[in-house]
Image (cartoon, rainbow, N blue to C red; front, side, top):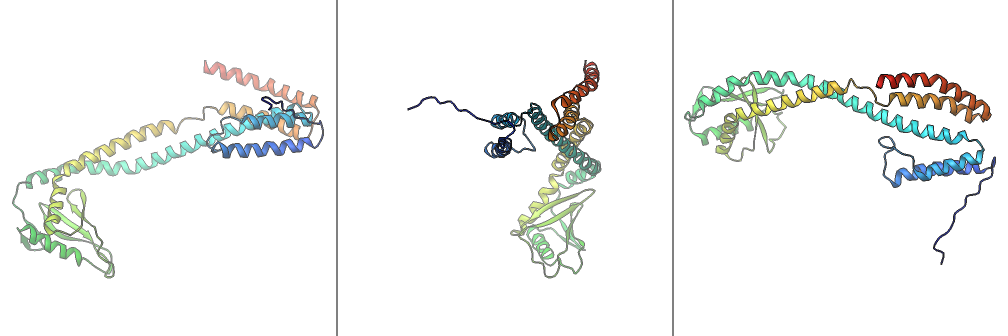
Length: 303
């Protein structure tokens, strides 16, 4: 029936309308955050149009033209404060990265320095006939050696946790931590191949020959393990280099943040105390006089 309608808002200066519009403003802020799925701490880049309309109406209701400015500064300060907190969270993450890299890089570098002997041993024994030693007993049959190793693993128990050497193969010791007497054998067990470095291999013990083959493959691929370790070390070095640069940076909007905060700290108490317009004018004029030289100096430094 009516394609266009006009909406009018009637406000009485100095009336209860001030409280009503303040309530409306707070509701709109909350609703906007929910409807837009915005995290106020992580985003809150702009103030919603309806929220600002409520601020305008509230300013009109109080008859104080500086109330809107106070709300604008408050919202701007909130945005800057959220951005600063996000920036500081990022710096905290970089500090954690630095700590992690500085702790783990020496471990990887030490491991890298010890690969040569293990790689040489792996290559030298790759084409040799199969032989696995258990204490003083040598076995040259894969199935028998796998069966004997499975039994050792199954009964590898002790009251106190310790690491035992179960066998020697191709110049490497095969080690495993003991289980408690009541601890069941898991579906997958972890065996350590120990040379200058240590290499872990997972075994399901379903096939005796398969168990021996998994151990053989792990020794044959020590060179691949070296390449992975080197890649990890280089990755940590890159992260450490970036983090050390980023952690030294300062919040890029710190000057804006301090300026808005200082202005808000002057204006807010005066508005809340319902100070005379002339008093607020004088306070802001004095603030502008003292802050302008600092802004000019900052511009000069930027150029």
